[in-house]
Image 1 (cartoon, rainbow, N blue to C red):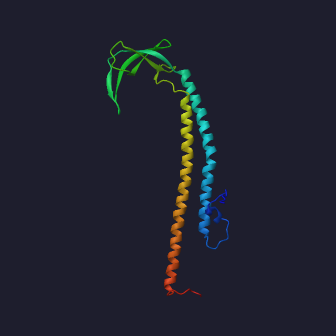
Image 2 (image 1 turned 45 degrees about the vertical axis):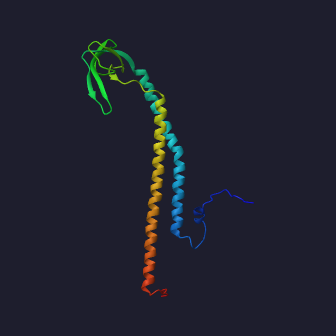
Image 3 (image 1 turned 120 degrees about the vertical axis):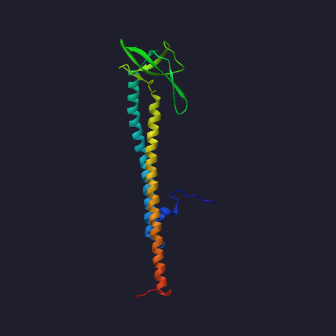
Amino acid sequence: MQTFTIGLGHRLWTQVFTCNPLVRGSDRFEVLVRGLAVLLAVVSIPVAGAIGTSVHDARTRVYAEETLTRHEVVATAVADSVMVAQPRDALSTARAKWSVSGREHTGVVAWSGRAQIGDQQAIWVNDTGANVGPPSGLGRADGDAIAIAILVWFGVANACAALVYGVTCWLNRWRLAQWDRQIDDFRANDGRTNHQ
């Protein structure tokens, strides 16, 4: 019959608490640093979630305000459109006029195709009449919050991993230097142990 035990399982964790003379102090220190890094990465999960929640609340307010302050009006082209080169494709723009709250506004508007004088198209404007894009949907706040929370957690996890890597590299260099010193001392005494 085979038995399985559930627990920490890895012998590294038991090295911290044993009195084994073969376990060096540097090994214990390395295991403690790894354990603290894992603990910090786990503890940072709810912190990242709280940051994501606050970002969600803030973005939801901003996007809700956008839906209240932006509305569609009809713009009329006052000049023929001009093709503007973009990184992926060409964009057609035309000088147009529109009216908001009885005030006439003019500006350059992105057009859905080639425009001629007198062509009309719906555009999004804010309360002051400035040409702005359509309001962001409230669902965008969810994506923003999730992205920020994941970025915060990955930042903490990467910092922990870098700390463990740096400590491990430093300890390995220190151990190799210590071994080199001991080998040099051994050679200096013609292979005999120094009992002075």
